[in-house]
Image 1 (cartoon, rainbow, N blue to C red):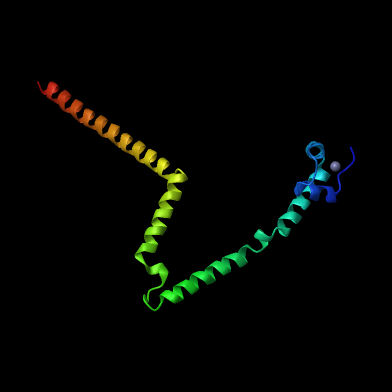
Image 2 (cartoon, rainbow, N blue to C red; image 1 turned 120 degrees about the horizontal axis):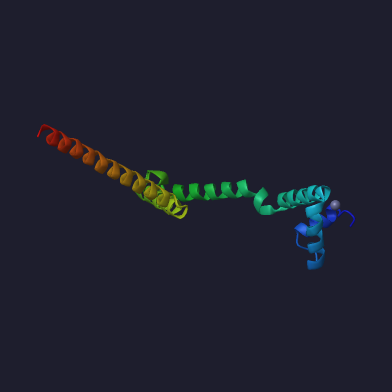
Length: 143
Ligand SMILES: [Zn+2]
């Protein structure tokens, strides 16, 4: 099979190819480093042409500006900025809790605590047992 042009890879990335062509291009990708490179280039080119990614920072600016405007309208009734409100911190804490819970951090922490507790507990038991043992041995020796 001959090499696939970068124009073809652009069509592949954009999903403009037939299923048959796409399958054969994918099969060629596994065997051809050169075409893998042009495929990656096509990926990069299509990514930079996506409006969402290139205007991502602009979007953030717009949102921040809108937040600032909302804050300004509230400024007359409340002098404190929005990040100083107790409610704001509750929301952040709640969001953090949710994120931690979903990422399983809580699970690993509780498992870790359980481990530590059970280890200390078993160590304590064995120490107590040893003390008792030596005491009893001493008493027995004295007798
Ligand atoms: Zn090739």
